[in-house]
Image (cartoon, rainbow, N blue to C red):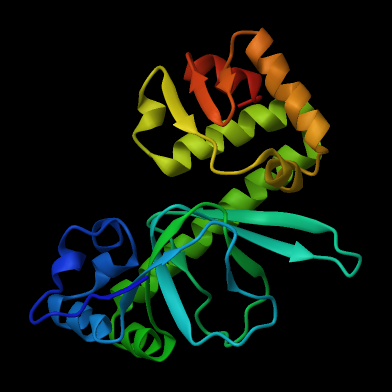
Length: 238
C-alpha cells in the first residue's frame, strides 16, 4: 500500500512522525523536509517480505515508522545469521554506498517512509546536522554491535535470552526501562530469536521456560510480561 506524503508547506504526515521528532528528519529545515517529501511515499510492508536483498543496488532509503526490521547474512549452505534489528524511528539504509551488504526483511508488519537516495544524499551535503544524525545512529549501532558481541561470546544461554528481552523493551519503547514492570509482544518468532542468538529453537524455549519458572517473566505465546525489570537485568548479567 502506498500513500504519497507531499503537500504544500511542511507535509502533514511529517508533522507528527516519530522520524521527524526523534529520527534523522529532525535535522531538516521545513524547506528541506518539503524537498525530501517530494520523492517520499509511505508504505505498508507485510511481515516476512524482503525489503532489500544482499548485493542489491540501492536507489531508496527509508525511515521505519512502525515495526521491526531484521538484518541478516546467509551462508552458501543456507544457514542464516541475524546480525541486527532495527526499530522505529531508525533510518534504514547505508549512505555513501550504492549496494546493500545485508538481507533486509520485515520481521513484523512495517510502515515505512521511503524516499529517493539521490535526493537524501544531496540534502546531506547541504545539512551538516543531517549528516551528524546519520553519524550518531551509525555510532550507536556500532556500540550496540560491540555489546552484542559480548552477549554472544561470553554470556550463558539464560543471560542471552534475558539480554534479548531487555533489548526489545529498550528498543520498542525507550520509556519502558523507567518502569518497574512491562508487557509486550515478541516481534520475532522463536526461530528468528534462535538465529539472532546463535542457539537452537529448543534452547530458546528451555531458557524462556527457565526464566518463567524463576518468576522473571510470564510467557503466553508471544505475549511477554516482565514483572521486575531490575531482576531481569541482573539475570542478564548487566
